[in-house]
Image (cartoon, rainbow, N blue to C red; front, side, top):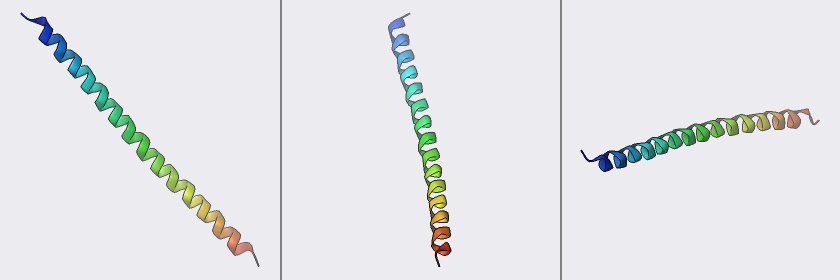
Amino acid sequence: MDSRGQGALEYLLLIGGAVLIATIVLLIIIGTSGSTNNIINNNINTYTNRLNNAVP
């Protein structure tokens, strides 16, 4: 039985798994930062509107 082919396949599976995990983590980070930006922009707009309405 040739174990070199099995070892190469195991390395390919490990690399594929690492790429898959890295992709999932990046998608989560991108999604989280997008919602954070929306919250910050909404807060800035709210405070700007309050300041504009407070000026006589």
